[in-house]
Image (cartoon, rainbow, N blue to C red; front, side, top):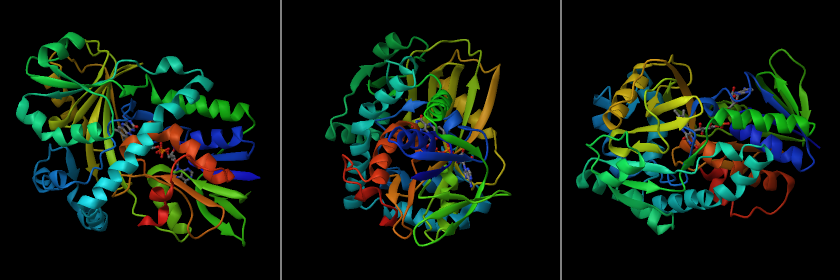
Amino acid sequence: MTTVVVGAGIIGTAIAYELQKRGRQVVLIERDAVGRGASYGNMASIAVTEFMPASRPSVWRQIPGWMLDPEGPVRVRPAYMPKLLPWFARFVAASRPGKMRRLEAEGAALCKRVYDDLLPLLRETGLEGELTQEGCLSLYSDEAEFRADREHIEILERFGFPHRRLTGEEARELEPELSDSIGLAVLFPQNRSLRDPFRLVTALADRFAALGGEIRRGAVTGFDRSDRNTAVRLAGGDPIPADDVVIAAGAYSGLLSKMLGEPMPLETERGYHTQIMAPGISMRHSIIWPARAFMVTPTAGGIRVGGTVEMAGLDAAPDYRRAKITVRRAQTALPNLRCEDFSEWMGHRPALPDTVPVMSASAKVPGVFYATGHGHLGVTYAATTARLMGDLITGAAPPLDMRPYRIDRF
Ligand SMILES: Cc1cc2nc3c(=O)[nH]c(=O)nc-3n(C[C@H](O)[C@H](O)[C@H](O)COP(=O)(O)OP(=O)(O)OC[C@H]3O[C@@H](n4cnc5c(N)ncnc54)[C@H](O)[C@@H]3O)c2cc1C
């Protein structure tokens, strides 16, 4: 049985490896270099405490204010607004109370599994040492800011994710570079990070190839269908026959699902990072400051600063002012952070309006599967996605009810 996986980001590569391990003959197709999409420059966090759906009344009430603030945590480019409206309507609809509770449970069910699936994958690729032990500190300047984030903490309590409240002094004992303006913090010990998320993709691709998997360079431009088999058409190349096809092309998956007659409301939440090679400080924990919407992660190549969301579609040129704003914010928490020897990057988070990924057989085309829409949590969910998709595709019983992640939920 030949399975073609489209897209060699963390999601497609992990699935290709899983299927090859289970005895399938897999062809992994990538139009650029392996792992150079969103999976390259993300914030490297195994963010098991960040499954809270993005759409909630407390968030969308702030959106009009953010629109007017060019330095706000979410930026919609004015020219893109009309295109975004249908997605935004679904985003708002996802925050109905009953729906929101369900989405929280669906995210939590995935996060509960993450280390069970990720640790074996790290062992198999020889990358156990790449996972930090330290956890993530969530920062607050005072009680009022903490209360504004109380909803998040309550959800984690409800689902049994551990956390520890710290005074500002206790936080500075753990991370001495933190500014005195931090009045309190919460430590999320399970929210660990990878030294280099790109290395995980390349290591998985190497393991996949060592097991006999084939990686092919090419852009998928369409599909030919007979009653069961689907052939994948590449730009300027012969069609590749496939018994099964897995669409795992990140934020571009919606373009491909449309070609298969199965559109999905997939957007790109564009995000930026600044990788600072000589930051002048060292850190052990990653930090987030919810009120200022940034994250800082110590990585193998220096300190990485990122965060914020820009809605501008797949084609608009990057606006690196977003990255510079985020660094300035990070410096309010880390006053000694220097930004001299650095690089900037932009990536496309594949975002569905209800935050929960699609991990699903096609509802229309036999032999087609989708794994996308992992949003802010693609690295976190990668190993679990591979495990669940491996079960779905080979006909094994997945350990979770997969109905919430179906493509035809929209
Ligand atoms: C700034 C930022 C910070 C983030 N931080 C975190 C974090 O800390 N933790 C976390 O868990 N997640 C984080 N994420 C999210 C995470 O990076 C993504 O969810 C994840 O990388 C998505 O993986 P993917 O494989 O679906 O997509 P991608 O990595 O984008 O891969 C898709 C691949 O498909 C290929 N492709 C597309 N179309 C075609 C085609 N037609 N033919 C052939 N190939 C095609 C692309 O070239 C690409 O290589 C962050 C994202 C960003 C942008």
